[in-house]
Length: 412
Image (cartoon, rainbow, N blue to C red):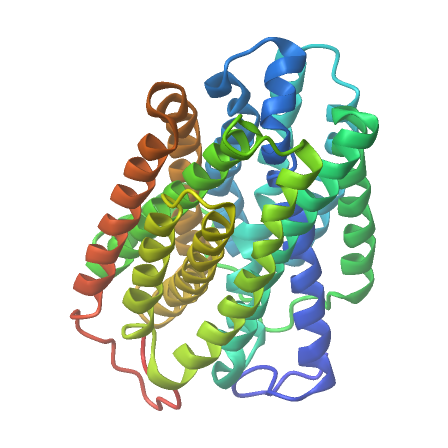
């Protein structure tokens, strides 16, 4: 891989395109697997005789396991390297997905989904750190935005594949179909992702890792970004978990396959994250993040409308705001750590730990909110979380920037 000796891969080079495509596909595979059961929640609830809140554990369990796995995967990637974790994570998670399709009970399905979430931790733990190391700063934010776009497309493709397969051949075929998609992406990533050229291992001693963690937790900007990740993802998952039940309820009466089409709105998130990354490269993340979160809040509130067209429109607006905000925030975390306290992989893992903790907690809470108060209860939960994230990003926009020399892009 022909890296620039001073700053990594430059915009417009074939090597940068190769890296971009590989991480895009890795994002597709990971997030197709994470969210494979979300459009199946009503089906799983009926199939196994469990409540909506219990059915939501098929999403909350793997996301929580993924977040906890980041506590190990992030520091491990800082000491042992990046790419081997990517390949191992994708391959193992695909195989576990096939095992989920053969689950013999509700408890076994939850256990296998949780193990799959743990295996998936390898990719998000290292992706942004790998890009920050291998890609020139002029292109880093844009490529990270493209990677986040891949996660958006993965979330969409996994759900869009699972919903019609479930309607046609049952939930087992749906989960197996997503697992096959993950394995195909894993093979393509294995072929196309170059090994790290600029990785420098950090000290692997527990004391050094703990000291690095303490430095990161003393940085108020990083802590604010970690909190923002959890709030953003919590609101996002709450909306989609509740939406699966609402669209199949008597209010709209849609089938599983038709209801799953709402996840096509993820395509807008893929575009929004890439665009937000390019804007952030020019003006910095501070002015971009609050605007993106405000857009997401407006989208959530619009879903209170009764007509199905406005519900879908509100969902699409929320998706645009969420993925733009998440793409900017995740890139901001690794840039801040790289230029400040260090440990980009560990910092990215802490951000994603909060991110998936928010998904796990709010996902389960959304099931309870739906059972208790219907869609208005879900909206109150999601808008409270997203509104709090808006306050956090406004405060972060006023914090002091780090000084770097030279500074070809706005400092994080």
